[in-house]
Image 1: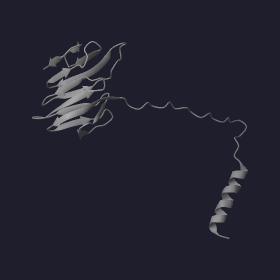
Image 2: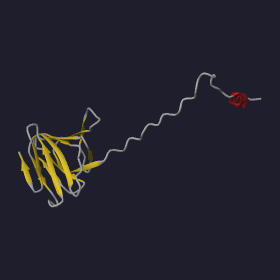
Image 3: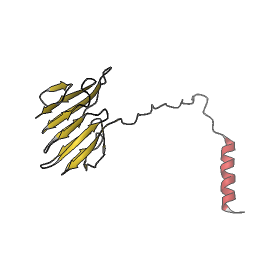
Image 4: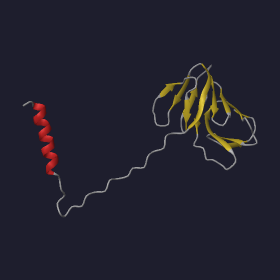
Length: 156
């Protein structure tokens, strides 16, 4: 008979033997590891011009930005001299980054009845527009201050 038949018979014989725990050992219950929720998309990039880079929250490298690229909490966006990009948030807020800017998409803390955008500006100029200031707010944190606004505002 062929080797395949012997292999199959060997596997069947092993499975028929069964494996038991010694009397003093108890079987270990399977460990339940909670599922990690997928990252929530906070914004996307539009209108790129010049050298724009993105650093993912879980990454160490600056990646070339692409039109329509999704941004998630704790991602960073960087522009160099002569570059710019729009960061369009899911609820309609738009943040325009000028040249030599560095921002981080902050973890958003929802508020009842208010759509909120949280942003950290580490360097450069940021122009922000809210689609509907009656139901949207923008929180901008800098190394020296935090500003919350419910209308169009320019940070320099």
